[in-house]
Image (cartoon, rainbow over all chains, first blue to last red; front, side, top):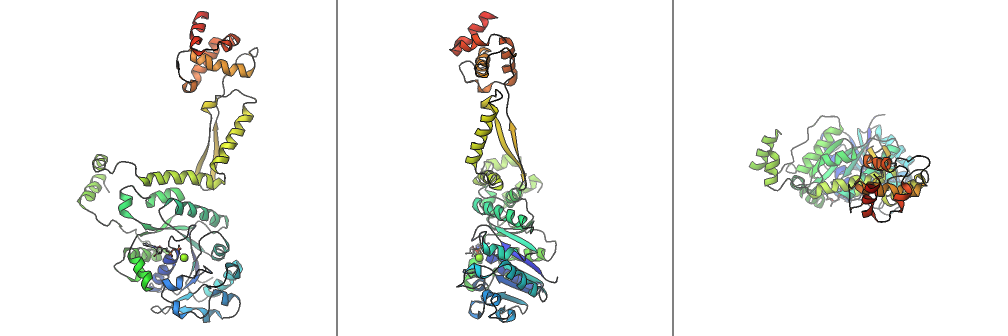
Length: 265
Length: 154
Ligand SMILES: Nc1ncnc2c1ncn2[C@@H]1O[C@H](COP(=O)(O)OP(=O)(O)O)[C@@H](O)[C@H]1O
Ligand SMILES: [Mg+2]
């Protein structure tokens, strides 16, 4: 079967799917894997700008599906990694232009030459989500530690299981450690208790994510970034490494240390 | 010790994170069975309406709740306390339930308060004591008089 198809989805929009896809793509490539990332969010093309490849697009996903472009012609090579490619979404077409079967056919072809095919799923539970889900070998569900995001994640998890694509794995994005410590944010343990899925990544809130998207250089290439490091850890877990979760505690002051000591942590 | 420290520094109290978790549990319970809370209440009322056609139940202590182990395992658990029946000769069920209420008040457990708090044993005792006197008790309109009436008879 060759390469593995990993779909990145969520229930709610804006939780960080595109950010996660771009960073996982970069990290997997930097780990020496041959990678294609596919933007399946037709009509809301985004992955190209996050990866800094927007000015190189000639053909898109719909062009491939409708036969106007050969697969290879539409694949955009990353500036830094020779084995990392993007297939952009069409910006002017609607989701119905691509079917789940089209996606299976496309990814089956890609599996032969690549180790990982990452699919950035659109938000929601409509056609675009079905397109992204159908070819998946593994599904990563991105959520934020917030009531509405977790609720919508639960919905999508149910659909993924109903489609026999489960159990997915969770990426908890935008965790604010200081708020969790004050009891003012759901912790990763809380989210796990509620959703009951294995956590494959905990990504802290990080301002550098915004600068990264401004410049089109995903944050995982910035060694200063904790979010970048956390995404890199996710990539290593995806390829099967056993990577401990990093300590996201920003200011381990004397008080915290004391509490931990007394707590036996 | 840790608790004390945490509390001293204002970390022990329940923050909005815990509230978020509780609220999530609630909405997901209903999302997962595809039955919103208001429909669930409607269902409970209908279930109860059927049961009271056949049994006298202590309506205030009825509990019908959803128990959820995970996404794919939910069960509806009902606890419906039945008021212990009096001998076959007793009056019809409406009168019985009235007498149950009067009876337990008569025991003095909850004088001047609603009957909600009484447990099964008290109800049962009341029934036994009053066996055969339902009609009279039921006719005792004022609750406060219940005890006197009963004492007088005892
Ligand atoms: N870990 C993070 N820290 C700070 N901002 C983030 C983080 N992850 C995502 N964001 C921001 O959240 C917004 C939505 O992210 P995006 O990846 O486009 O979500 P989605 O693809 O799920 O709609 C973007 O503005 C992005 O910069
Ligand atoms: Mg997106």
